[in-house]
Image (tube, rainbow, N blue to C red; front, side, top):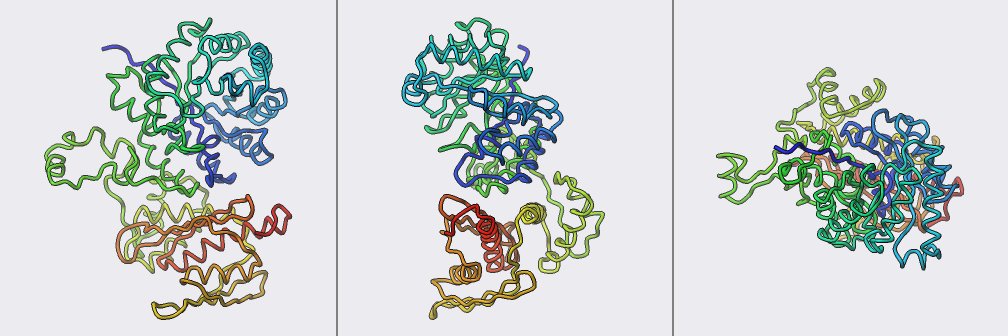
Length: 514
């Protein structure tokens, strides 16, 4: 049997994934995702775009300090200012990397860069050489490579290799290519770029036409040795190639691709759920590998086949991606030992103080629910960590709602701030609308409600309702999330979490009132 070659996984969830509208993460969330990615054993974590803002620089720098095994990269345009900032951010990492890029397609060079091809060649060599003088590991990307002239693309890559790049990346920046074309580009670059045999050849595919994963896999078949991707396929516009689909395709069809990764696939499901939770972006129900229905069988003939032998209709097993075969059930009589043990099995990493707080919240939940499932615990952890990072301007003291199909809904909400109580009454088309309006009156804001969703955490009439809210004030987005067995309580708390962030920014003069 032919020896399998290793394909590196370059994860850009924290950079390209976060650029998806409404998917921004705070520092704590980024650090938690970074830790999960290291447990997943990705080869490279692209932590952000250090020059973009002080917040981006801080998050890249903190990820660099935290991560020990994976390479930590920062994106940088092919300018000294960008490269200096990227190096300063990733320098603390055990394995730092600078990822610099410049556009190479005619349309980008003419209209965006306003540079001639020869100028792009010169800039590529100079900036890659400068980056390599600072950092031993440099990746160079030719932005919009799939719409670039292949001959010119090879000349650019040759300059990058000459300047010291150890990885050359072929991005399908606008998701324009097809599997056949991507494979041909990879082959052409391999065969016509001096020095290509000595570097890693990478691809970065976007999903505008729904072919990001197919394009990435075709590239591997053609000889690419690194794939850039994101958890759950997050990213700008239609997103990026989905890490979980790529990894499981290579594993399931190892004989066809002749390639494998170093990913610990049993961490895939947990990481997918974490990214979904911190970004507030649900995984579609029929999403390949990690969707709720990915291993569901309803048709009778399928059910019969799976019961007889799972391989009849399952080409991979839930256990392979870390879906627990049996969830531990906890209740109000469960002790601290069982609680802590289950948190560890769920991948929880936290100190004793955090565990103490979670145990108190677990006991409060267990008094309201007969059974506390794994999903309940995961939700508790996620909400707790989000709330820890949210400024508490107003606290919910109480709310009363009157509603029905023959009356206009009204809500009385009382909030506490610095020992003083503030109460407002509002009416609306429904109880949730009325509560949100009352909160707005107390806080003195009028944000736009961009998104509001409720999802049961588990099955049953006593299930917790997880509410996610996204509000907008001008161009600024704020997200809130809360859970409770009372969906009205989780609704008003999630909204208040978002409003508190808005009020904090207003009082610190960061935004105008919505």
